[in-house]
Image (cartoon, rainbow, N blue to C red; front, top):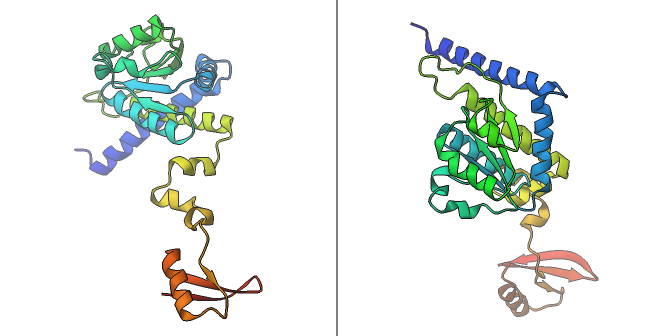
Length: 251
């Protein structure tokens, strides 16, 4: 029996091979994936609305992550569940939007209504799939064809390598878009104020108060200082002499 450590190494090697295949395909500047990648960037950039990302099952989880990454890096995006789309959520997709649909096989039946909706209202559809000639690939205006690679779980064929490729390609789209837009760390902080990353991007101006500080002169009586502290709401009062701070009194 193979040890868990050896299994882990085998999984990582298999998924790395999938990423290598994706890199090799994208390296060819004249290849379909390279050309379509640029077309996808152009379509997302020029869309007047948002980027709608959709997918079912494991592809759906990847789609949610891609939408979240887009949204936090300056590309307004939202995930739409294809099952819910068939029951009214198609109304979340406008004619100004662009849709990215994920399906490894390209034959996910739940995507049918979204695909049809995009075609009916001329909404740009970007398909991310490894299924060349599939329903999604044929219907998409732009097809990001992911190279077929061995799934890390050879027994069940559970989505592993294919989802790794999709999430990596989604990250590539997001980073290419933010660089093209000149999106900065300061811009990122607007959407990501929480956590350790948000704290690292804070500036003094984000932490300081922006209303007038309570001030008094060196000859102000204690009663007057207490009144300034109480009215100011900061628990402190600066002592100013000739325009310079010479002391601080706290409560």
